[in-house]
Length: 345
Image 1 (tube, rainbow, N blue to C red):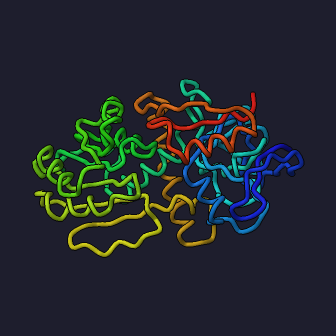
Image 2 (image 1 turned 120 degrees about the horizontal axis):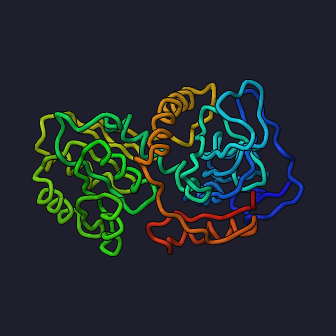
Image 3 (image 1 turned 90 degrees about the vertical axis):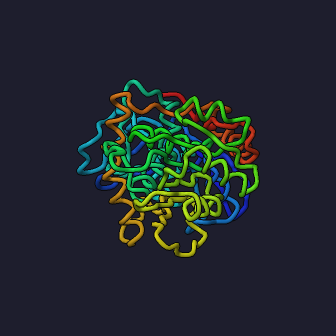
């Protein structure tokens, strides 16, 4: 079986032709990997060895393919179904998307509707689940809940990112006006996918806070930091610019830095990388959240209430993975999910 491996920490991506084809266990499916999305985590794992228990290993987090084999007890999927999502058990052998076939846990995977293409599906898994978990668990807002008795505005920091774009879309579905941070060059993109206003994250903290106050008049209680790098601005905004009397919330994709406890602010760190880590408290908690959210998110996609983010296929074949990762690291395609088409159906 073909795939892309790394043989040691910080070693290069290498195409291999002799990988062992995985066998699905109970409540698992075997997926033919057609298109994979590239994530910052891919290169972070390669460089640092984070979440990797042993080598050699095949990485890859954003899955989009077709079910080719069922393990015992599978009920949701049939052979031939389109499937996508965040690769479960990241870092374990047999689960990475950068190979011909990989495993997915039935309850942690999405069934692809016909209205969503294989390429579009590859933009969804990591980004949508990360945003949905943060908004649901961290900010206490998630469709079909509405904005009733809540402040008018919701703030997304890092609105250009794949995760941030899904955060904007989910907040809009709940009835919020959305203010998002981004660079001036990406402001048009961010408003086109739903943001009502933007501010430039490259400005000084003082200027950003002034813009937040000017646009929202303090009518906000929730902030989602999709950038993993804006906690200082977000917490300062909640502490000094929010005028609401309702519960203030701050959720972030940064799961590695501690944030000091804040008076009257609920703080939440997402741990999507623990998904599929069965038998561990953090893994089991994450699995439970994802199992709860996937049917709700699937419904939005099937009904057309939520559209996939825009992606761009930048390379084909397993040899294209290293190019895609390099392009992602250089951040040369702003606002689009970088995709690699691994093989044909």
